[in-house]
Amino acid sequence: MPHALTQTIDALHTVSFTSQLTALLKTIIHFDCAVIIGYRPDKHPIYLFDSIPERRELLFQRYLLQDYQQDPFLVALDQAPRQGVLCMADVVPPAGYNEYASNFYQRTGWQGELCLAIRLDDARWIVIYLGLLAESGGFSSSDAHYLELYIELLAALCRKQWGNNPLYLSEPLQPDQPISQHIHQAIGSFGQAHLTHREQQVAALMVQGLDSEEIAERLQITQGTVKNHRKRIYAQLGVASLSEIFGLFINHAITAPPVTQS
Image 1 (cartoon, rainbow, N blue to C red):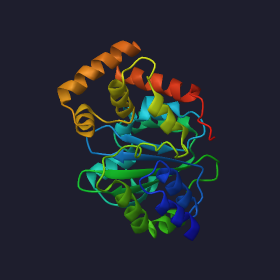
Image 2: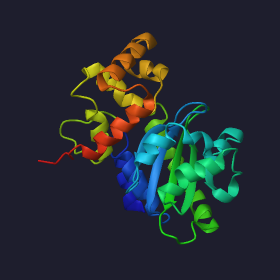
Image 3: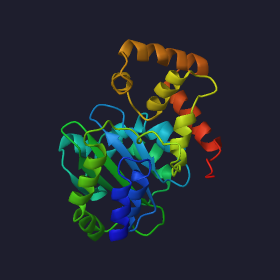
């Protein structure tokens, strides 16, 4: 763990932080894949990272658009905000959970799930989902207990990364910085053949889950300007909804060639 912790600290405020944080978590307990989101009550989650090996279109086309509203962990967080580790036995399935389970969760292939809720401030949380793909009976109560022992350390790292910063993937890449996450490259290049530079910036923040107010604050422009950009983005990409934007992004992420290091 000391080596993984050092690497995570070294990765603060870089594009590698979330992947290094995931590697650190793997030194604590075993899991197969992870999803990290920024959460603000009553708003769309903001995508920060995932290591889902397949069917990741479910994350973008279903969960981040609407299914998050029936996520039992987020519902529990809304009802009783508490930093810590949650397993399914700790939460009460909300209304609509059966639809959530059949339309999203069961289709992911996850056989077990733990949720880490980390409070950044009164209005913002980092939520980390850890999943098991193998039919091994899921996580045990000792897994959750052991992870809970490290929650303050993990919270300190997340607050250092995002505490005074907006929730988005990371700082812009420097020219000499290797790209460690294909998804970051895909977001950076999404729509570049059809959109202006500013429209591309707006589109990149849209697919991360930011609303017009947050995009305006992030880019230091007015909400009216953001809305005008959104209209043109829809027209230029030939779509009529945010769902279709996510669909285009998934296709782009799948087909975008990886960046190779020279």
